[in-house]
Amino acid sequence: MDAGISSLSRCSAGRFCLWSLINFQGSFRYKSGSAVTHRLTDTIRSIWNNRSASARL
Image (cartoon, rainbow, N blue to C red):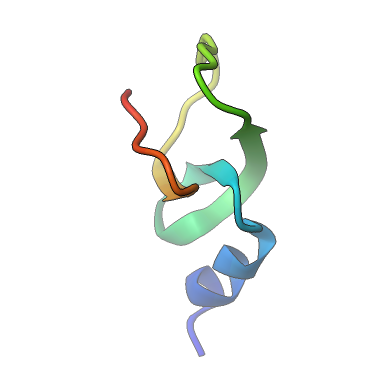
């Protein structure tokens, strides 16, 4: 199994998840909640919206 695919398991339901490297590798962060605005100050190479709501970058 690709390591990136197994890394997706870190992104629980209801979270907008971000990784610093491609293929869901590297440093992991997540945001949760609705109608939330966050400033992204780190380099992000992979994202996954595991929420029921849409997200914009």
